[in-house]
Length: 235
Ligand SMILES: *Cc1c(COP(=O)(O)O)cnc(C)c1O
Image (cartoon, rainbow, N blue to C red; front, side):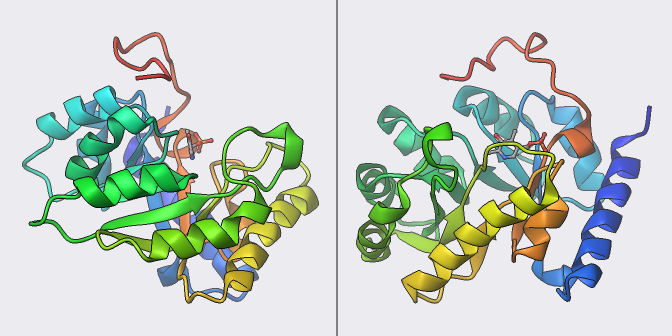
C-alpha cells in the first residue's frame, strides 16, 4: 500500500501532465484533498506533504476533525449538500462552501458569517447531467441565482461547481465539464473558479478549465463508511 505522501506525489504528477497536455499552468489548478471519512492523522500526514486545503462532506465529522487539528493552518472547504439548519456552523468554521444551489442557503451564509472573518468563498453547484442527477441548480436558474448571490455582502461568489454523472468515457467527461465552463463564461461575471474533477476524471476536468480538483480516493484510498460513528450522509 502506498503512503499518503506517495499518493500526493502521483496526483500532483497527473495534474502536471494534464496541465501540460492541455496548455494550462499547473499553478492555476488547486488540489483540494477530500478527507471525508478519513481520520485527523491522515490529514496531518497530507499537510506534512504540502496540502493545506481539505474538503469535507459531513458537518459533524468535519467539526470534530477541525477541533483536533486547530494547531495547523488549514483551509476548510465544505463540499457536501447543505441543509439550512447547518449554515451557521458552515459560516463560522469554513473558508469555502462549494455546493450552494439555492438563494436561501446563500442568504443565510451571508447573514451568519462572523464579522471578524473575511467573506465566505462560495461556488454555485450546477446540475450539468440533466435528469440523471438531483443536486445542483438547473442551468436555466443559474443567471438569476448568480446575480442574487453576487449582491450578498458577506459571501464572495467565486465560480461554479459540478459533480457530473460518473462515466468512463473521456469524451463524455469532457462534455459535462465543458458545459459548466460555458455556463460560467455565459454569466459574464468575471468568476475565476471552476470546482470540477475527482479521482477518476481530473484530466478531463483540467482539459476544460478546472481550478479546483477535488480528490479523495486517489490520495487517501477507498472510503470505508463503517469505521466512523458520525459519517451518516445526513449529518
Ligand atoms: C467524495 C467527493 C469527492 C472525492 O471523490 P473521489 O472519487 O474519492 O476523488 C469530490 N467531490 C465531492 C463533492 C465528493 O463528495
